[in-house]
Image (cartoon, rainbow, N blue to C red; front, side, top):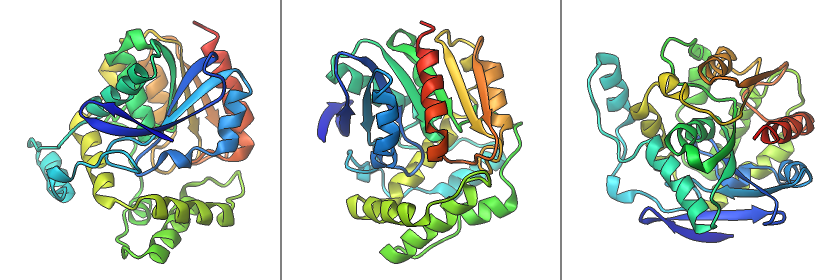
Length: 293
């Protein structure tokens, strides 16, 4: 693993496969570190001729932290949005998109296939309309346009996902299992042992809740991307779970409808997750989308 100096910060990254193959940048979601991309999923992509790049977004994992921004006032921002008032955030998804493109610069990659999951899908979408010359193809997985007219998570989902928890290691891990099991989807078996080990590894690698909250501010301050998505010309694939409780599958439909010529795949039984049983289907779809250029 290596650090790249990008936009006056450092981004931790790792690469897999043959550098002469098609570059594929994977972007993780809210609160996730690059280790949340399963190495076996990455293998399904390198086996299909991709040179895979993963990285920690700013303010998470081993990338630079924005400590100088101070403790985020997430509740204040939420209340401001409800009142229709402006609020401040130390950075937005646009800045995070610029980080990703800066990493491509460091790696001397002029153009890449871009794939993001959840918040990573939002960042990938932003790259596609903000830096179109750098994008070969776009894949947006379990993400959204942030259109406020879309169905929102139920109160139960919000209570599960945003429940306050003590900052101790064991409590954090157990909450990750509770949330992960809830959002996984009924069509696939949740491997609790595997996910408990991953949650422990993520905690030990870096536990930084302020960064997660600042990511949420970055999402909120960017707002609705739907109109901007209409400018995307890159071949686009949208993948969504029919049982996604965080971004109901209508969010995937909304994304596909906003991007001209995009392909939509709805996976039955999948929630806000990437079950191993779906990896071949997803990797094949990404590879086929990449061939459209």
